[in-house]
Length: 87
Image 1 (cartoon, rainbow, N blue to C red):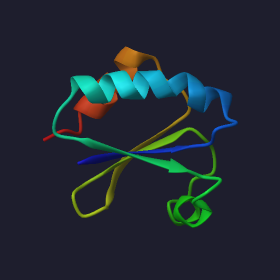
Image 2 (cartoon, helix red, strand yellow; image 1 turned 90 degrees about the vertical axis):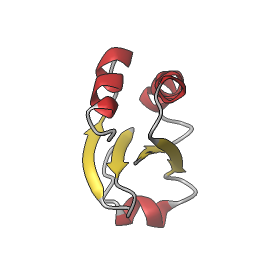
Image 3 (cartoon, one colour; image 1 turned 60 degrees about the horizontal axis):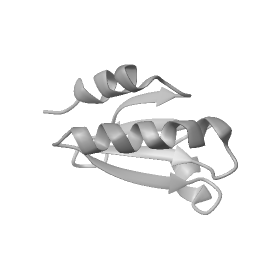
């Protein structure tokens, strides 16, 4: 499983989520993190239909989207959402 974090350096909510994402990823196993800066990888963001940031996408091992969350979340809500998808 992989968590893909679509963000931009200028995005306030993205910067607020960064430490939450880092903490949750450090606490969990069975999932990896990929960060995609939409300013430097616009093609990837367009291909994933990212219309707003931050956008978090959980993908299976084949790169298929399992679930998506848009916007900021508290740590416990974010962690709970990620955990529901770890096998």
